Figure 1 (cartoon, helix red, strand yellow):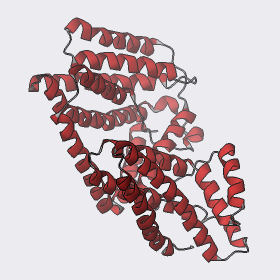
Figure 2 (tube, one colour; figure 1 turned 135 degrees about the horizontal axis):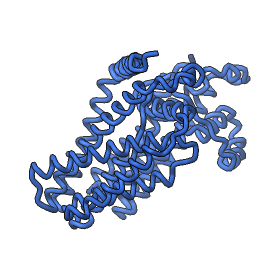
Figure 3 (cartoon, one colour; figure 1 turned 60 degrees about the vertical axis):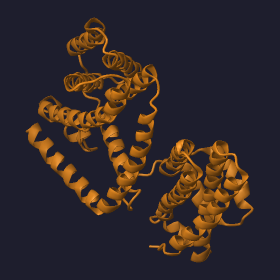
Figure 4 (cartoon, one colour; figure 1 turned 135 degrees about the vertical axis):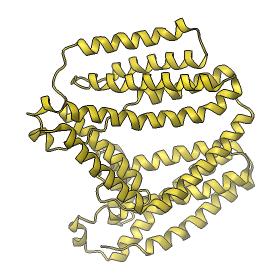
Length: 399
């Protein structure tokens, strides 16, 4: 078996699949990133006009760099069937996993370069920097990132959880990043590097067990799920595997109030929303991110516009729940009309919109305590968003 050739074949299939999906959402993705970078660049420029103190800035930059250095995601392109067919040939797969490590390092090195480039303007505001220091810092950070990837792979052979190992790497990365940004003396900077070297030597000479195939396959599924969930924001992706958790407490809380409405489909959609990680988790994260943005956006016009846009987007993302039961023919056995199903789904979106609007209006009230502004933002969200959603819900197909 040629491990190098096997990896190339799977890598090419991976690139072709991603290119196909990205070509479908190219226009939407371009405008989305344009908006994100535009808004982020505007407020980053305002931050540079009045930067925090030197110690605070260096500490924040060190935390950012240490998080990027410590976080390692291996892309091995392994499949479920490999647990049966490749397990016996594990000793001949060294070229396969070597290519996987190099590819994983390169992808995460690009993220590190982007973070360093974004941090340069802030670092120049709080201290002097030159081209020589920049290239040296990038080289050292790249070496440390390579160390994290390789050590993560060596420690991946162990079956026990790696929480302590993660903390060890995070502390070392934090110390190195902090000393580097502080331009500490060579003797202070070399301490975490020496510790990293000792850990690398110890890990290399420690007897390694067999590769933990189940964990590799699980992580590969998680990486695919993250990619598909991102694509699902722009288009429908059938490969998204729904993760379900019982959440019995939340289910019990909503059972009696919804039973009084005598709308079975409303209960079905609400239960699917609560138990599905890709629905409830996405919704909660969207609320948190929007609340943070509304807190830092200056002036009521900006807050007002952002609240309406994100309120509509948060409800728009939940339209994917309509197709959650496409493969469940049992819903067609309900003695209810399809119009009642559509009405129940629209009622479910209205409840989410009302809750989101209340949260966003509360954030605006906390930052700009003017009754007229609060009333305007709350009423606008209640009136405009349902009208736009109703047009989208009317266009939804049953098959």
